[in-house]
Amino acid sequence: MAALNAGITPAGEGIDGVVWNILGQTYKPVASCESCFAFDTLFPDGTFVPPHIHATQDEFIRVLEGRFDLVLDGQPVVAKAGDLIRMPMGIMHGIWNKSGAPVRALFWVSPARSLHTLFTRIHNVPDPAEVIRIAAEHEVEFLPPPG
Image 1 (cartoon, rainbow, N blue to C red):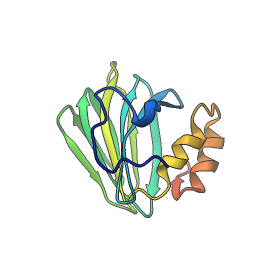
Image 2: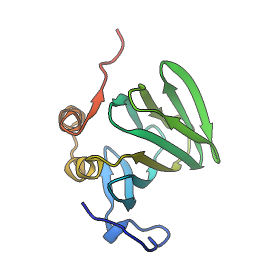
Image 3: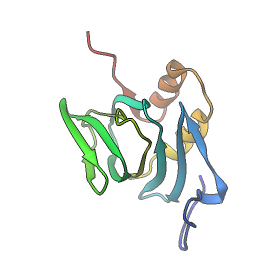
């Protein structure tokens, strides 16, 4: 995993120029160390991350542009530009862009665990079932659809 001990990640860039394509969303790592991992995201309209649980990480999202529809612990929530969302470890959450426009957001998890490695492994993997299988190896549990 790349480490950023001190310094600046230039605006619009990922650490070491890394850019991941994860099921149509763009993720750029901007900070990575043992205690946290942060990544800038671009969610095109109609993209989403289905309900899942991080058993060993707290996750946060700062919406920079646009609006997310979320489910947090079974409850619907809307987050718009400027909002900060906190998803404690063990709490089910899912994220959708149904806004009609792209959404930019800064995500971060603490502790980092192996999320950086997960994103490296699922970069350009086109099959959602394979993404879910690999995620389970990195302490991210996707939940089955309701019904």
